[in-house]
Length: 62
Length: 286
Image 1 (tube, rainbow over the protein chains, first blue to last red):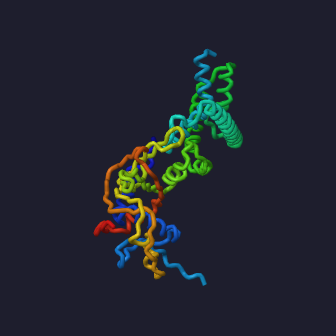
Image 2: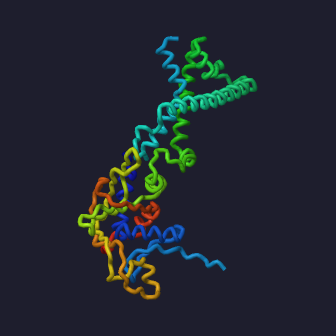
Image 3: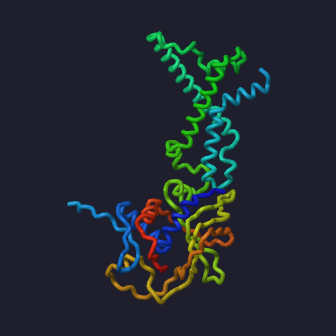
């Protein structure tokens, strides 16, 4: 048998999922984070009440 | 040399190789889902132990020769520095003793012990280190198949695999599904899934069938963007119903599993949520 995640990792994943409203939301945030190449922060979107991963503002490539 | 002493001597000769095997088995057992007790077969283990031992002894012998030559030259240049008589290369005298020619001096035996310990520490560090990890990055050493690519490797490299496990439908239409980080997955001899365990999962009802009352589920961003309105068309699919947190660990046997979907979430994102998202107020469940 293999224990894949430690207790700490399980707790972290579970807490993060509860904070943002479920594992589905977590997966969506991860997709957004990958699109933004990991640069950005998590903000609460007022209109929908959901957390989104907002990409860091970069200077437009002229 | 007596037989028992000969055995002890050969174990000592092979000690670095055995240390590599022990370290290797330790690391593969950690990620092994299938028959972890057979990380390496006996013959390949013997070959590997002997080969690694020969190479490491050679390198250590060369290093000791160099060090001895260096301190001798230092003593010749500065005769004031005198820390006692020069010892023979412990590996040379050890192999001479194993071959039965002459007994080892006490200082040589102590030096040999130190050399062997140094060799083992270096090898174990190498096997457990990141260099070795990178060298064998793409090799599925335990024959885990897709579990290796989608669960084991991501979990060992800073991702948390989140599994959606759909259990068999009771009525042919409705079924219970769980969604949560995969903490344990077991495979049989042929690589088939035996069981899967999820930590702190969400439990929800899913429905298979034909729906004609609403358009296909779009992602939230598509819903925000203005677009042509979809006409309601009957379509078949899966629909998720209300979810709740089951908590603890849920272990599911292969008999009840219909389907498994795995997505990986970067631990960095979890850290970021941990730091940036406040505990309260909690977002109500969708």
